[in-house]
Length: 138
Image (cartoon, rainbow, N blue to C red):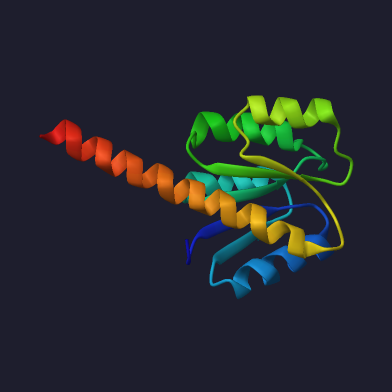
């Protein structure tokens, strides 16, 4: 899926900017936020296709933000990012509907395949929804 709307939320400016730059090169429309509160305010205005969300941030944690996102934008695809991933947090995030869980790394190439799979998943989900709507309309 080209030209996807992606929100990147991370309190580390260097990583946030690197992710925005990398995703923008793939022709995606990318917006960056440094806190969960900023992200949630932006989602009230426009729900993106995909959100990359840091798990450990000052203020609201990624898990708290994910819980609010599920209430406000239940269909948005969320990939959680963390430098300190634990199995418990990954399991909790997946139970709450996160699409995937990435360990932050210097090698941002590892982000590409996960983002690509998430956008393919979103595209397929939307196609199925359109088919279902057409089937119920007849």
